[in-house]
Structure formats: C-alpha cells, structure tokens
Image (cartoon, rainbow, N blue to C red):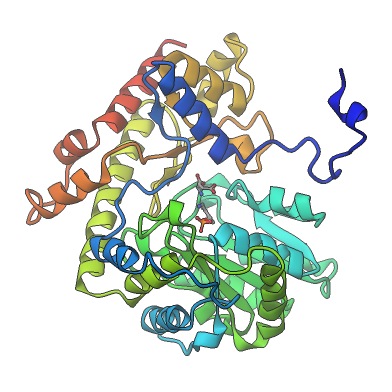
Length: 431
Ligand code: PMP
Ligand code: GLU
C-alpha cells in the first residue's frame, strides 16, 4: 500500500527525495556492518579522534546542575570568552555582543540561510551540508568552479566573474579553510584578493573556520582581517576540542551585520530556544585557552600533520593524486588514473567506487559526488580519524616529545590507517 496517499499527507517538496546527510549515513552504515561482524575501517564521518581536554570535561562535570534556559544568543560569560579568543587570535576588536552561540555551527549555518535572503555561493568541492541546507530552505546555490592544479581553491578572478553579471544581487559566499574535504588552506595573499572582490560586490562572507585551530603550522588567519565589515566567522568545539557530540558552535559577527545576527536570534528563539546550559559553561574553559589547551592543540597538530603526510605519500605511491593536507583531518584523492580499470568492473562513478571499496575491503570513505562533483568525477574523501586519539597524544607528548614524529609513530599510533592504505593499495592493484 502507498502510505503517503493512504494517510493524506505530503512531504514538503524541498525535502522530498533528499537523502540523510552522507557523513551521518556512512557512519551508521559502518556501525551496522561492524555489528554484523565486518571489520570496517571508518574513514567516512569526519569526527575528531582526540578526547575533549581534561579541564573542559571537568568544567562540564562542575556545571552539570545548571538547569535554567539561557539567553537565546548565549551565556554572557561564554560570549565574552569567545570575544577574547577572537581578539587574541585575530588581533582585532571584538565585543561579546558580536557573538552568537548555537547548538553546533551546522544549525547556525542553517538559520543563517533562513534569515538571509539571497544566493549561496560555494566553491566546488565543499562540505556535504551547505547545499542541502539551501535546498531545504529553497535558496539557490551557485557552485563556484575551482581546479585541481590550484588545490581546488577559489580564486578572486573566478569569484569576480560570477558576481560581475549581476553586481548588486545579495549573496553569501561560504569559504571553508582548512578545507573539508581537501585539507588545503588559503595563503594571506589569496585571502586578501578574495576579500577585495567580496567588498566590491558587498558579499557576506561566511568564513567557516571550524578547522582553523588544527591548521598544522598553527598559523591560521581569518579573512575577517581583510574584510572585517562583511565577514562572519564560524567555529565551535567539534573539531579542535574533540567535542562534536556536545553540539556547540558559534558565529562572530561584525557590528555592521547586527540586524542579521538579531534575525537569526529570533529564529533561534522560536526553534531551539538556547544552547544546552552545562555545555555553554564548559565551553568557556576551551575558549579561554591556557597552557594546557595550547599543549593539547600543539600535539593534535603534530599528530594530524604526520598522519596526513604519511597517507598522502602512500596514496601517491599507489597511483592516486591528492593535494598534501595543510590542516584538518581530510584528504581528497583522485582515482581517475584507474578509470579504465574501474570501468572494467563497471565502476563508473565515485559512488560506485566507494561502495565497491567498502564491500571488498571494509574501508569506508565518501564519494566526490557528496561534495558537489558530477557522478563520474572519480575522487573521494578520506577522513583519517580511525585511531585512538588519546593514545596518539600520549605517545606524541611522551616518547616522541623531543623527536620528530615519523612513520614509526604512525604505525604505532594509527595501525588501522596503515591497514586502510594496505587494503586500498591491494584493491587498486588487483583491478
Ligand atoms: N563546517 C564544516 C566544514 C564541517 O566539517 C562541519 C562538520 N562538523 C561543520 C561545519 C559543522 O560542525 P558542528 O555543527 O559540529 O559545529
Ligand atoms: N563534518 C563532519 C564531516 O564532514 C561530520 C559531522 C557532520 O557532517 O555533521 O564528516
């Protein structure tokens, strides 16, 4: 029986036919297969492998009794702490009133698109959720072209070409760096050039800097330095404080965009009300920083850098082409060198490639089509997170405190990532 006609209800056309978010779906599929006894190497969901820093966990324990609804825009001491964090990191003025707290930056991105009327510009490739969010809301998405030779990065010229046709059209540009899915980041001169084009067309730049603290050289800078009046910075606890499941994100607005911030707060007040109280109290410990937080971040970056470099080398040796990551925990290898061999097995799309890889080897990764590419673009995202982050941090700050991390470290701390590379190499070799 057709349930929909029988019950006399319909699903909103914007949502009909959309699949659940691919990052969460691959995680559920991987967990299901593990429960069925398969040995799955989980490189699908991009979840931080590291534990939440001890002082932040203690702060959560201490504040577990906090039970009151908090102000819609967030707890004032947390907003002050985040303003201080931005002032320290970006050496720019920032007031607590510029800060908006939400239950994950993903939710804030969604209500930003609800509150703002205009087009969404996103470079291809981009994180899996920006475009579906726009589709759910009914906004149009404009994918911006980028090129592999250019690390899949947006250039100021290409942005200009897109805006030139209709210069006064309201638009939000989402810039995410270090990038999910490539791990690449922008240099200062690139940011400055993009900022100049954004100013010329009065774009709003949503600068998704959720991986900023895990840029491997520790020198991440916000484009807000070059375009302060039009940039919203997005960050949160999920990627650099290990706390994805805590669900806390934040947007930092310039005073010029206060009406947009207020409009988002109205939507928040009518939907999620406020972000979880104990989590907000605990987040202060992370944003206040301190020597322990610095040490945690320093070791996290060392580990991610050596792992990223190891995987990059292995992928290159097996015949894939990938950019060397500069931050985050992602690589975006291209397998088009195997196009003919894959075609012999009827594997014509990135989706089919990932499906077959999972079935044959147990390695779970996400196809390029989830990041905005046409189906037959034979690339995929590897989230190199299937290792014990606590052990890796202990080893890096213990035995390896005074020497460079090397292949020996990767083999000891991340054996499942080494195994994943062995399996992929074997699979590609046998095609
Ligand atoms: N932006 C990017 C680029 C991401 O990878 C993610 C994934 N967590 C998010 C935003 C959303 O993060 P959260 O909602 O956990 O703050
Ligand atoms: N951002 C993570 C990823 O790209 C997972 C969490 C999410 O998508 O909400 O894998």
